[in-house]
Image (cartoon, rainbow, N blue to C red):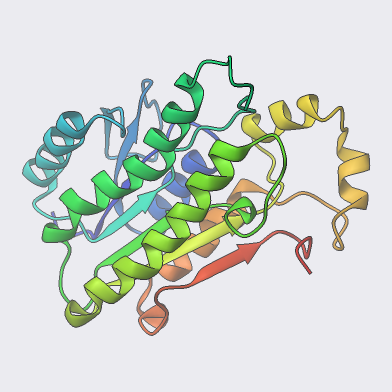
Length: 237
């Protein structure tokens, strides 16, 4: 295929679905990965893949390369959040699951996709979070994982720099997704109350995060690497 190819994880909903749509509009053929079925008119091909499963990731990347002949851009968007208990009697399963999806999944996709990215124009974009730059008391696993994603992004940017492949992280704040709605319920927040905590007075839309990812994938962003770019309406200021 002559079109550039983007591989997007966590592609079935929210920010991931918006990224698939934006890259499709921009002329990419999109390989959309998710744990559940991907039914998108914007994806050239959908793949079922648990990003925390090393064997599944390796096989899926092989399938994408066989199907399209190339991968130009990797967008690691798959994520899992939840309040994990630090009670000594609590089960540790959620801690391990959150790190496995958010951090290990990012590592595994990068590991298997990097050899296929073209020198000079390859792009890796990791969707982190503002919680990769700050802490909250009840999401220690998610905060640890997203801090890890940002650290990994910086290290991988140096590793990939001799090939002139850029690696960046996007750190969204409150974004209008099902995950955010669940978090708002946990905190007993409604959108009006949340908006008061954001200088721009509103949530971020998934399309805005997708557009930033698309910009980072372009030629004009070839000099940007190793960055954690915040899109949060000014909430971290």
